[in-house]
Image (cartoon, rainbow, N blue to C red; front, side):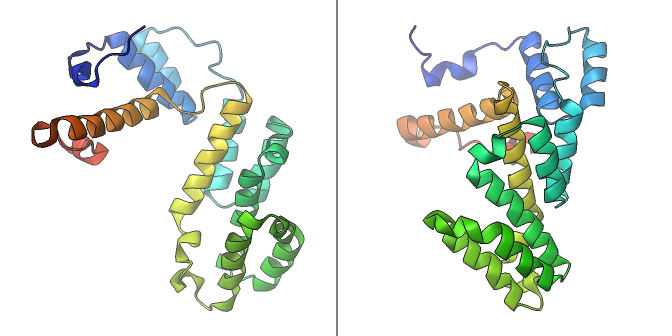
Amino acid sequence: MMELDPRQYEHVAISDADVRNIVLSYLIHNCFKETADAFLTSTGMKHPVDYLVDMDKRKSIFHFALEGNALEAIELTQQLAPNLLEANMDLHFDLLSLHFIDLVRSRKCKEALEFGQKSLTPFGKVQKYVTKLEEFIALLAYEEPERSPMFQLLSPEYRQNIADSLNRAILAHAKLPAYSSLEKLIQQITVVREYLQQELAKDAPPPFSLKAFLNS
């Protein structure tokens, strides 16, 4: 089957059913159970087969990671998705780093050092983790790590990225879509706009901006 010319995407009709499925996919992906229930009731849609697959546990794991309670997130993940973290070293390392950073933020430097030596140092055998380990340990040298060159490690955005990665990994482990339909749609729109920029030059629409779209 031939792919649709990107220049014709703006003329493709989207049905109400498509829009509802996109919204529901987003709510399920982000564990908005009550909102999803209300949405299904108000629209008369049928409950998807995989609708409630461990959503409550996945929501708890996501919020534990988002709040910096990484050890709780790890424990629940091991219960919900056995062997996931053993198979995904990057994600396991990131979650352990969240606990280390939380100890540093709480000024529990001795505990942070002990935890780093026990749980993070073994990752130093793999070259790609060495630079990150050096950054984590360097945080201990600052009285105010939030003002150090590594301040981004203590930011909400750092926790958010790891929580999102963990959520996607758990979904993929359960053979469910790792990205919501809305995320895929935004990615596609971005690619199409970039393509049109290259093809049409001055006559092309501006690059896609979600912020600009929401404010329009």
